[in-house]
Length: 332
Image 1 (cartoon, rainbow, N blue to C red):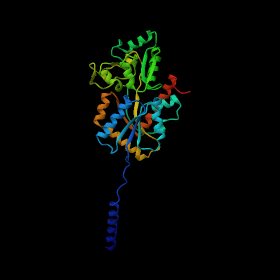
Image 2: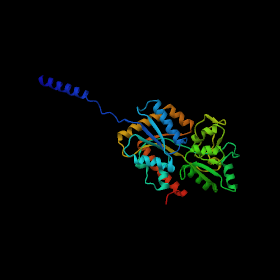
Image 3: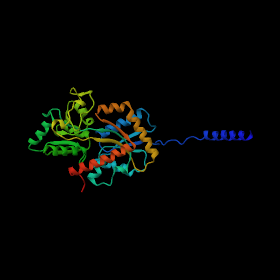
Image 4: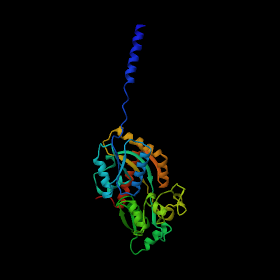
């Protein structure tokens, strides 16, 4: 009986001691979180970062403020180098696209996506062939026929040199047997402004980058560079929805391309720090405002984290290495 009482007493004492020990707290940011956008304000990457900023702050998903910083110099390399040099800093993030592969390939900068810590892929983005609203072109076939007949190369605007837009223009040249004058800008917003002012003949912007000018009657889309039409059927402008826009291939321009939109941290952060942001962006991806943003800008919902995101990055890197090599964009 005495031994039984001692055993119970010891168990109660141990339970009391354990009850007084709080579990280790999960890591959380202790100061402002900086999201670096490697492009100028107004482009699709900037719009995505500021949408995420608003959702996090409005819904109090973290106690720390979110700051968006644009670092567009050198075709996005400035922002990428900043994150590379910030290894171990869990209060910095970068929102990036396929440029995370293409900028190092085109410049021989000592950068690689594996220098960073992948957090989450938030979506994939499409590209469209946009023209000025007053232009005579009704289809991609009209535009390509005009390009063949023009005494001087038609001008197409896009974001940065040897990046996604430039690749699309190369694809148009290769498929159509024509030559264009590609004009690089620091953001899709600038490319849209130049098109609305008739300073270029077309651009290859994402939906978000020309949405305002389409609604304002300054630009209009001819086709989407995708294998399938976009899914969103709500009317946007000119009585059309994103789903009403034909694929470029259906108009004789057999070029398609989509790019990732993802979030990365610097390298050398802890698993706990990475886990905090994975959970944060998972909550963002499930938010109603985020889903509205995807629909408004015709983004393809495609949230991935962990190994699924890493495997996507490995495959996408290989795809871009071939595309860049075919286009002659690889640094010698």
